[in-house]
Picture 1 (cartoon, rainbow, N blue to C red):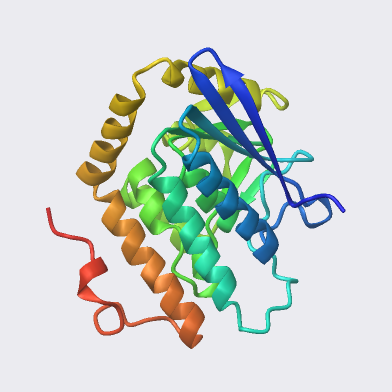
Picture 2 (cartoon, helix red, strand yellow; picture 1 turned 180 degrees about the vertical axis):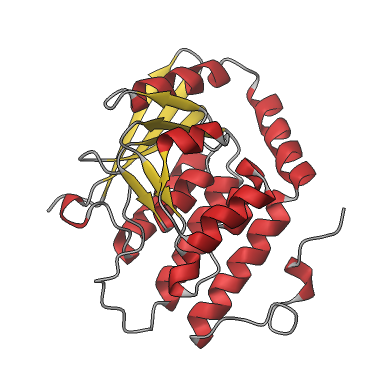
Length: 252
């Protein structure tokens, strides 16, 4: 049986590159509990590599990810899977080295969130993004999307839950490299190699400064707490009453 995640570690001139390739072709790389657990394990393992200089996430079979696996049977109502979702998003958003997503085909829901959590998005013409929080009543997408495209565009994409083409995503700054199909990984590796040539301590510090200056760390913590509350109770949380003040975004 093929593992749901292929992990490759390759040598760069300045260190190593970890590539995480989602591999559930029959499910269009939809994220079930097993794939999410594998992603979290791979991120934790990568973080222990003292030589790591870059992290690449992509899908297989011309698809990035169809999002959460709606066909998965979950005895706990999805609480464990939501915990894994939030842990993966937070770990990837705050990862200490440069990260990139190579996106071909659909990146929907959790898949779009995964791409949004990376520092750089390389997309092919076939790529399309969708944040379906307003369809399923789950408050996903806003925290990571705002930092990439701005408040008004994030509202457009998340509240409408419409498909966003690679061309529109590039025009809004969500996609930084638009390349032909089949060339996304090469373009992403090229950028990661450039970042790998910089001093790793400086890269880590700059990422922390970017995240803190934009308020991204706080927004991600707040959004993740809302997701956990929704998974535990089955209803949308009252953001003023149900969530601890410690994770509310600080006013700056």
